[in-house]
Image (cartoon, rainbow, N blue to C red; front, top):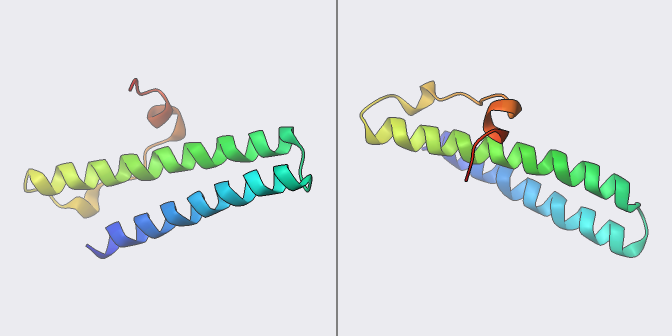
Length: 82
């Protein structure tokens, strides 16, 4: 599944970005407010990526086309209870 690999690649990029933000805060390159804002955005995007992967897997499991899965709005993904 080529698209799944692309989603995983994007997730890995965001995890790297998260690490870089934490390093930037530790080195004093950015302030805590900036780090917090950027981390919040990364976390929301990560949630959307994981949600998309779950949708794709569910569609494939039930014989549907996983390419019909779509990124859901942040507000919808963030509203889930874990």
